[in-house]
Image (tube, rainbow, N blue to C red):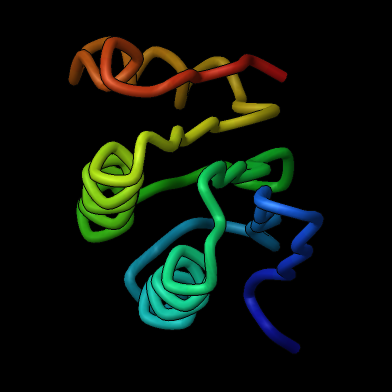
Length: 103
């Protein structure tokens, strides 16, 4: 089973992380996002409703995605984030770079 699912509608790609967002599944997610942006996606939504833990390589993927989208006037949205991860994003001031929507 894949650690994520992907759905593209128009210029929006939604990635649903299935479980924790850790180094073990970042390469597949990173490649899926890069391919989507290459094919014209300008909005990437990451659904973290099933995520209880995120590690630094995964945070790096989010920052890199934000930077790639910014270059094409796009945006990154992190949806359905559990409170303790919202706190982490806030502490790291990532909520100032991209939208972080609590669960």
